[in-house]
Image 1 (cartoon, rainbow, N blue to C red):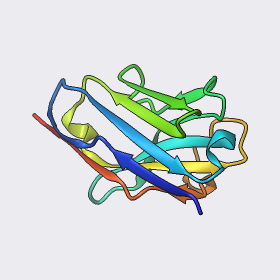
Image 2 (spheres, one colour; image 1 turned 180 degrees about the vertical axis):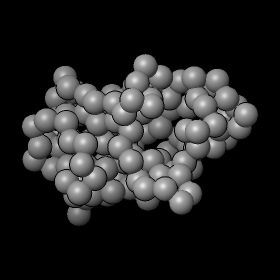
Image 3 (cartoon, one colour; image 1 turned 180 degrees about the horizontal axis):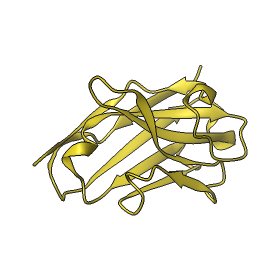
Image 4 (cartoon, rainbow, N blue to C red; image 1 turned 45 degrees about the horizontal axis):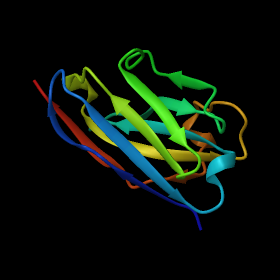
Length: 125
């Protein structure tokens, strides 16, 4: 059984930083593309960033490009999202997701097989 557990969310002032972590249990991590999504109240769950199984390829939403960095440690079965220069509009619940047996980055929510429970990020102005 695959489980994803996010941590690292919280309350931060605009301009600050947070680092999210997602620990994955099960044997799927090293062969999975990993993604971070976010969902603000009343809005769709949108892609933030995704990284392929090797870590050599990544994708960022335009709204976070240059501020957020996705990375992974296959030895620790963990994916990270470093968030810098945070803005109030980054406030959302952030979800980690795994798309198993994928070689490339995956931006479509429908292609992800497993999801974490989410962690709240609140950026105050």
